[in-house]
Length: 93
Image 1 (tube, rainbow, N blue to C red):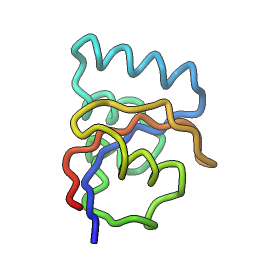
Image 2: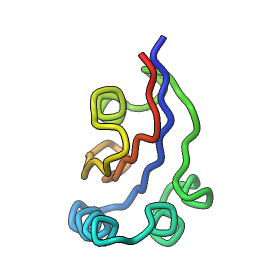
Image 3: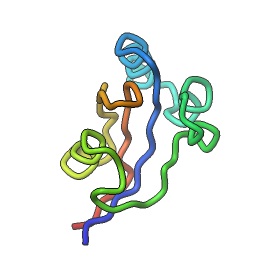
Image 4: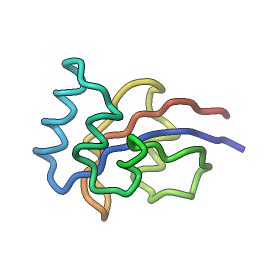
């Protein structure tokens, strides 16, 4: 069964999500940005969500994690919780 490990940053608006993505792409550390800005409790761990399988996260999040490019910051991804930046750190088929 497929498994992935990923980190994310959750914010309320798409504009904030895009601004944070720009900071990361300009060299800011993903985990530091997560600690400073993420509204998810995982922000305290630098956004790390650990390992999970398909169906454990909401559909929109799942689709990105199990099809997106590993090692690249993806998003904004809109879910019922807000807007996410997602960093897939590993994935197995």
